[in-house]
Length: 313
Image (cartoon, rainbow, N blue to C red; front, side, top):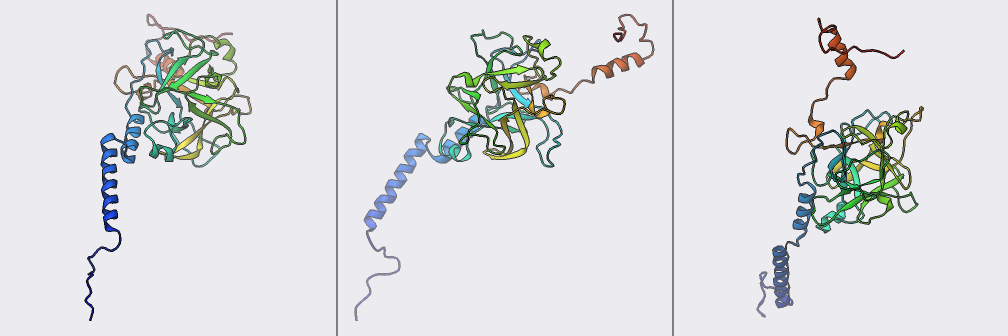
């Protein structure tokens, strides 16, 4: 009777080679861990940079200057074209591809964009107003003047520029299939934008005047003459959750006036509080309301320094 020399705990096959491979895999794992090259480590660094708190520039006179750090915000408005949409103020954000973001710890170029419900200035939504024609840092940004918008995404050694180009069969926005807006490190005319006053009847009068901070403006692409737009009803599943699509397209109503989805604000910092924006300040009452309240107060009609409200004939 032959005796069985192998029990259930005996390892069969080339066990020496298996042990060697396991040891090599462990050494490779520990080496990558020491160098910070593990997938979870690279992913964590990218997310930390994109969500790094930033400090916006403070406008002392209410105007935007070259070199200012601002947030691009699409003001809250009701969306009448769809039942489901993102409400509130939406800020323009850098949005890396979700799969590529898990594989690299650096920004992939070109990089996507989206509009998110966040009012906190971080690396992914803080833009720098840059010169396009040799203007000196500190000069006013003016209506009708070419400028660029750059973003570092929390990184210190790289600047990406807000860009766009004509729509093609191979290149368009993901949901609306309109003209795509993206971030690139190439310096070209495709990076150039212009600010326009939202009221078409006053647009020519404001040409050449400084752009007001925290006020509604239009941001038009110079090369294609398309307006930057936030599609609140078209959702994107991004690296940071559900956000709205951003594209380049001009929407006009029946009076040939740009719709609120084309309105943007260059939001600056709040001088009263660090890491805050002017959106956090309570909105003052309307000018007409304040005038009516002032007139309605007893004894103010003939009070010294009172201003009469006159209407041109």
